[in-house]
Length: 394
Image (cartoon, rainbow, N blue to C red):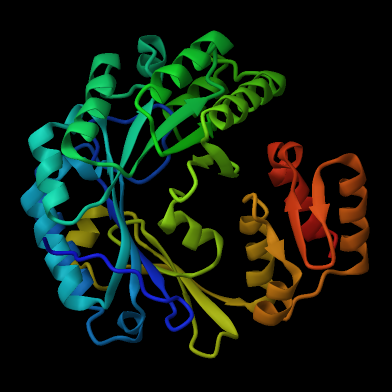
């Protein structure tokens, strides 16, 4: 096993996360606007380039912080073979200081077989993220997914066989033509596999996607907000009944199974993105500002020169960071503490912002006291609207 797991006392260490973007897909899902390519002949060239980028950080200030989580996203990471994962993980182990609690690989159901899962587990990968989206054949066809219902069911059986006790499954709701009965069937089917974590996303129509084009042309009508809200309520209620509780707008977990990696994003810990289109956020040593950047979204350019890929480099001051912390934190059930905003960001809510919160509290959307602010279950339904109003009230 390349990765040995340990839990360090976070009081003594600043912890960070590592994200690796694997840009290969079998085909384009209708809703997806992430960067990907459907040509696979350069997979090994990409792995070689990714290792060069990893090694380029050796002895840098970024490698001084222990890595708490590693996340392979995409794209479709499960299109890499076990040997390629091994090469990447060995490079990470040689370059970074590791205190890994969670090592996640996103997988598509049609890629998963027991032997493959066993190989990944033997490398130290301890969490799978399965992109099921739905068990309904018509919805899978609408979303242009590469798998079918039978493959989705088999993949979840295989996770159990391989001993993946820690896994998450993606569902998408609010699809055009998706009835409440179909959604309830998806939930019941998924719950039969006893998942410790579920991510449930409302279908978003992005402009530069196949779905976006169809909506623009009037060929598809997006569902009404009331229908999407009903889907949302059904998911929250049914999962809670099964002991899987909402802890972020789109994420649900049994106690103790909340995602380590994503929680680090929401709490503004450092994270480094590797691979084409990957994003990074890293605080300066004085904690007075942070740098954000992303890698260029171009596989050919990345393979040719994986080290000089940073674009859109941005310096964020404490006010910008505080507003972003509010935006991220208020999407979680935990919310944000005023003392953290003051001590970490030197940020105090204005009188107008406090008046706004008082009004939203009367409306039943906000819970706040002298120490913290969080959204109620009803508030989480309209989190984006409340957060925008709060930020612009400053």
